[in-house]
Length: 272
Length: 272
Image 1 (tube, one colour):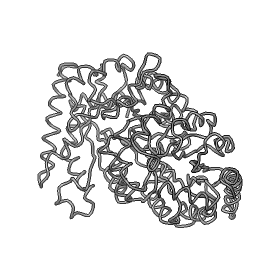
Image 2 (spheres, rainbow over the protein chains, first blue to last red):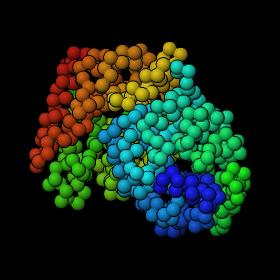
Image 3 (cartoon, helix red, strand yellow):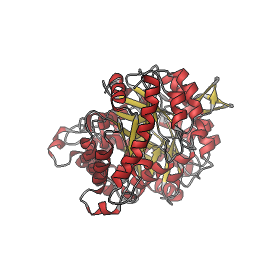
């Protein structure tokens, strides 16, 4: 999917919501446990009830890997079930030497046909560039993450810039706004201002709304650009909104409430 | 496996070699392609021919993920085939928020029964601590990696320390030498001196010998401690040493030549 196609989807659906499929056998409604593939069944119902409200699904690969081969099968089935026009993110935070990253790119872009993959920047350029060679595919690089541990290294200052600012400044020369996004946590709304100075045009994938406590309005105020430039992800607050036979209705309600808020923000910025 | 058990294995086998199973359908001998599970067949023969010469196998998860469900099956079969007393590393470079890392720990320590998992430090403490809760299991944190891109961020200086030195200094307080190792590339032999000042006792996993050009003797001179403290990994130079029906003999020869060099170094340090 291209930059323009993603923005077009956002305007068409009046939403820049990404729904995170962090699907966990221990948390899904228990009546699904009797089905042949409970995780796929859960994901299918979540997708059916939210696909008109979001522009992206983000699959947290850890939750599938934890189940071994079975999880990998659920993952592949889910990916096939997601409608074509929806941007699919593998949230896997990969990053390795170039020779190995070629394989991760093969895994997520060729074998699994995802649109984007989250990447950790610690190992530098040759750990990122293999993901930038696929037209219409995206490397989504960690910049400033949503968790408490983001304070440990990402704010270290060197030559007048924090580490996450160095990551932005260097990495933006490796790709373009057409193949590179950044992860910026909603739990740091004030930092979107300096981040937008460094990368005014790139899309930002923003986790941390919902269970992690981030503020949607503050993030949009400081982070939105002329092509929206934001994908706001919520996982637990949507997919675990309900826990009985009508769980997918509860998920729809949770997604809808984000969507309506986003619609209002989009109208203010781009017109109705 | 405990710290002492790992050192005991090293003294018993006269080797601190780790063999990297970066097994790739495009690179294994073509006669194996007719078998039911070529990657497992390849790994099985490599394991049979090297298991007395090494103390560890390191499985590069990218190579298995690139094959989807089939790759995951080959991975599980390989892990079951490795003898009990050998330290098994999942080289996956994971790292995410705590909630997600609990799942990665489940994937690699409970589902796959690996002894250690490589972890990227960018997201800080809560992305590492979930891996430190399993007795006898190891988080193997990236410090100074072997690739060219290690120059991009790992040497940034802040408050008189490079980023990788900050990673060592902070993270060593999260765990101990009993559950935390560090990745330090053999391509930076001179940096083992300052690294040993920061973490004198921890084991270091050292990739970059062989195809990447690192120098075994220099690494041992600067990096070995009183419990050896080094696992030296080579992947391509061992597993792809031959490419015909007798490939596993060629792999054995390559592993043996490392082992003999290590035996000599161990004798000099700890006696015969």
